[in-house]
Structures are given as structure tokens and as C-alpha cells.
Length: 358
Image 1 (tube, rainbow, N blue to C red):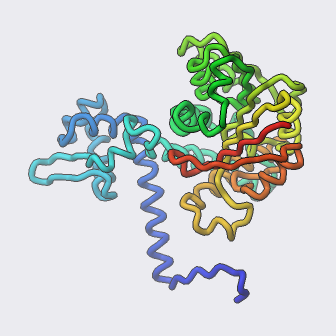
Image 2 (image 1 turned 90 degrees about the vertical axis):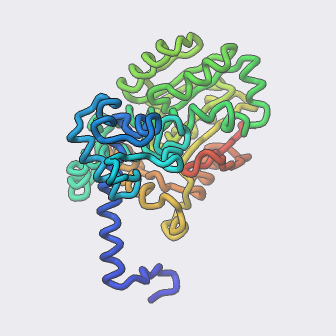
């Protein structure tokens, strides 16, 4: 075996046992997603030990389905069952990463990706055989799930962690600057900034009409007036020296032409403007990701969404694991020579690239 190869170091029995773990883990991801969407974890965190009848009543759900869900949660060691009292409880240690009250640490929301990707699996199989990709509009709940994830990992941490990572930007936002969120999705992050900094003006660009409609609705719900959303193919945007701050939250690697988009960002920034790029923390090589805590997830969501939506547009198909090395290379090619990379405590999945236009 070559020195650079990565051996499995597992016997057949050991590997089979690992596969069983994959099956159970996939099943639990689906059931945890259901527990999140139905509010069962939130209810359990609120009421303490309860029978399936009481839990179903408190959550306003069908008891038979709740009881079967509890079976999965019990055998999966997510909840604790008292057979004598016929009650089920969610330990505080588990609630700390499964309830909405735990935001931004709520990992239950992340489990929704498993069902979303499973729905699109037949189309991805076609792509394996025929090439091409799956366009955004074929994903049923992408914008909904992404908006919730953005609300947790980005919007919730903007004022406390993300913006303070850029020296001086908070003061500038208070004074009043022009900000662009590129690939704004449903507008959670941009509206959060708009509400916090009323003297600044915020613009959101996104490719899909669904995202723009959702963003406008969210802005109306929040009552922010200093924000506007525009349907825009960012590979074709022609802004020049317009913005003081441009943000791209997990958006660049999805683009059909990320190289062109980065060029456009550099041109759209004013002199001394800042580009904040939140993107997947990874190496550009598979070997460099062997110890990545979410390595299989990153490659899976890349294969079944990030890479595919880019290829559907005839794009480069960089994928989510385009990695640090490729990101720095492309930022440099776009004209960004001074790039700082930060990792924030609340976010185990992303790096934060801070690039200034001189």
C-alpha cells in the first residue's frame, strides 16, 4: 500500500458494525428532525417527565405517533424512560443541544437536512449517470431549512461574535454605511443587521424569486425599513465602488462562477471596503479532512446540493469542501491581497474570511 493511502484499519466485522451505526444514525436524524419540527423537544424541555398521553396533549399532537417517536428516542438514548411510571424525560444535558431555547447550539434543526437531501436523492442518482445538476427550485424545503440554520449560526451571533471579529466595523455601522448581503436567502441575517444599525442601509441579492419573496416578508414582519431585496444573478452584477461592507454567508461555494462573483465583489467595494465571507471550514484535499468533525456531512450536502446547484447552471461545481487553500487562491485572484481568517467559538462548521480592498 502506498504511503499516502489512508487505510480503513477495520476488519469485516468491525466495518459491518459501523454500517449498523450508520443505519441507526440515519434513522435517528430523521426522528430528531421530526421532534424539532413538531416542537416535541421544546415541550419535553418545558414540562419535564411525562407520559406519552400528556406529552401529546401538551404538544397538540397525535398520541400514537408520539408514542412511537418516543420509542426511537428511548432506544436511541436521547430521552430517558421510566417503565414503572410510564414517563419519558429529556435530560437537561440533551435539551442543551436539542431545543429552540438552546439556540445557537440547537443541533436538532440541522437534522432536517437529512430528509431534505433524501427527497432529492432520485434526481442526484440521475446526475451520477447523466451528469449535470439539480436546480434550486427542485428542493422542497431548502429555503426554509437554510433560513432556520442562518437564524441560528449567523443572525443570532452577528452582534455578539461575527461583526466584532472585524475591527472597527461596528462603529462604522452605527455611523451609517452601505452593506450588501450576497446570496441573502430569506433575509434573516440582513434584517437582523438592519434592525441593529438603523443609520446604515442594507441590500440583499439572491438568485431565486422564492428567496426574495421570503426576505421581503421577513423584513415586513420585523418592521425594518432600511433594507431592500433584489433578485440578482451575482455573476452579472455590475456595481462599482458602491458598498462599504459585503457579506457572503455560506454562499460563494454554491455559485456557478465563484471566480466571477469574487471579481464582482472586489469591484463593488469602495476603497478600504471589507468583504466578510463565511464559508465551510475544510481543506481543499480529502486527506486534509480526515479529522473533520463533520467531514461526511460536508461532502454529502455538497454532493446532493452545493455542487449540484452549481452544475445545474453549467457552473464550476466547486462544492462545499472547496477548502481553505482554494478559497485563498480565488480571493487573491480577485484582487484581495490581505485576508485574515478567524474561527468563532459558536460555529464549528465555518471559517470567517475578512478581506479588505486597498
